[in-house]
Image (cartoon, rainbow, N blue to C red):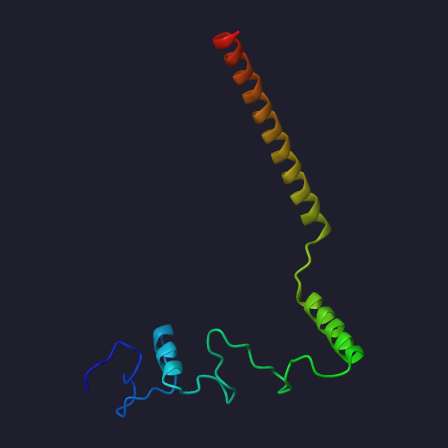
Length: 123
């Protein structure tokens, strides 16, 4: 048995790995129609991601229920956010203010310099 570097057939003689080890192997496997996940449908590029709970995520249902579900999902996503500490916010604000002050000074000096250059050439 020769070694195949494509991620297929390197481990088993029948040419079918249990898990492809490279991204190219996973793509090739997905293109062949094999399931690379644990029993869920393969989402191809350009198609919507399948719902986790098995329910279709369309526009059906009561508008009030959809609004309630939307708000629940918003709260769930906001809980996943890594919020900065007060100290980080203060440091970031100071960095931004110092950078803005530096850029205003630089642009102001360039403006005065170009103004003087223009007056000496044309004035």
